[in-house]
Image (cartoon, rainbow, N blue to C red; front, side):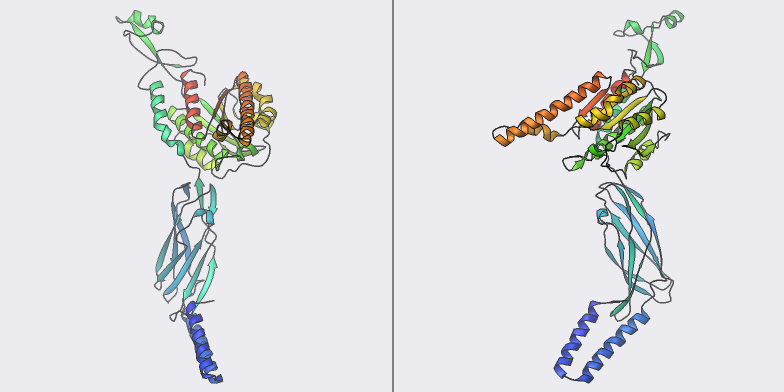
Length: 430
């Protein structure tokens, strides 16, 4: 049961009347009338517990976009339902409206649409639905809260999508509109065509030329159906923020661009997210569904405040990818973490696979390194220079071990990683 503001107003008016008349009879009459009105409302209000509640709508939404979830309320009672419904969601979902007024006829149905605009990745579950059914006098209401389960998953944003047309254009140059006459280390034969001035004479197919009256040249295309394994570090260093965003979120953006590009290039991509244990895995998804599968798997991930286990990561990679493939590790080039966890296993991984490391560089370090004029700025600049030198040292050690390193600021990491992939593909090194 719930009392309304109208009841409070009438009670206050009754108090004023009683104080004015200074009569016990007036007090009894005022209280009796108010109590009778409340009782009438409770008796005539449509029952809440008999209402049937159900949901429908979106189950996934990109972070920053809006999902719509519809709550359906069926009133099987013989009286009309005049009510206020509150559909409770976690604050991070940005649910609107918070409260909806309903007028459901006897045996009728009403629908309430709630718009969700999440500000955090992950799963958001509906808390409960509270319905307050009012009587005809508006003095009192029946009230009940009911769980109506529904979960909306907020997917990581795909901000680097704007780079995709440019990378696809580059891909078409490699494999499609402009066939390469220079054979890469692992490129596949495509077709023969007539020689034109400017073609490399090394591409002439002498056997084909002997069978025809024209000189023929071979054309090649980058290899297709190659394997890519993305290893996403979810350890403590990925919880560090660049600006206001964790490094893990920027890494996810780069993974999405690489996944979309690899799918269009005809390559197969798997994902493993881990620190000391595997947190998420996507394997064997079709090229048409791999981007959705990878995005969905990354959505609930959060960086764990534990040191990643480099030995476990290497063992997981070797167990998952038994044939040579491109292994893309998204991590942070933290000198201590890389020296302890990654460097001891680089030689083994590089011998079995092509290893590409992507890391998010903090542009604030470059800003601090340029600071001059005051003692505090000079000390900050010295610390920034030392941090850059340590990062460069770690990157150099990885490169000497046969690893390709892409260390770029957040906005540049996704396209730079895609460029490295396309360069490997053009050279036939996948």
